[in-house]
Length: 184
Image (cartoon, one colour):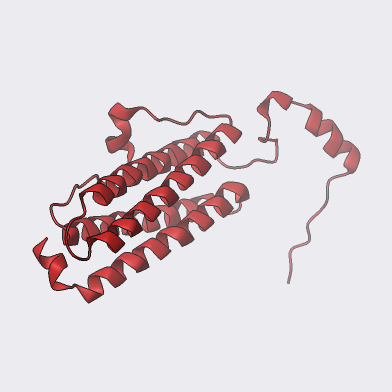
């Protein structure tokens, strides 16, 4: 049996829209714990920034016969992670919060670690570990939000799909394991 939704009278919608207009997109219908959502989003922002930095390092440090194509993949992932960070920061502002870009606490707020990796193989593995952490983190956030903040949940679902794609691409690189990856 489907749940019947009662629509609010248009006069009430109009009246409610005029109340607390300084809160922008956050209306009385927002039912999530905004403080907790902002905390989670700032942790996700820190995670994305740490991933951007790690991928950038890997892009510049990749060496060996197979390094060029893998380094290019690192750069693509870095740019996509930067896009995720920008989306998350924008959503934080929409919810009336402030994105936390403070460098001194990025690593402690990030779910993923910044591990440099000493070889191309190590770099791929560390990036894959970070992607797997992001996947589980985003799944948990999406479940936590449920239908209380569909906009944030939908944004995280799109980001999650890209993180899963990154993990799949990195796992494919590990599957082949050319000798050069093992020696560099």
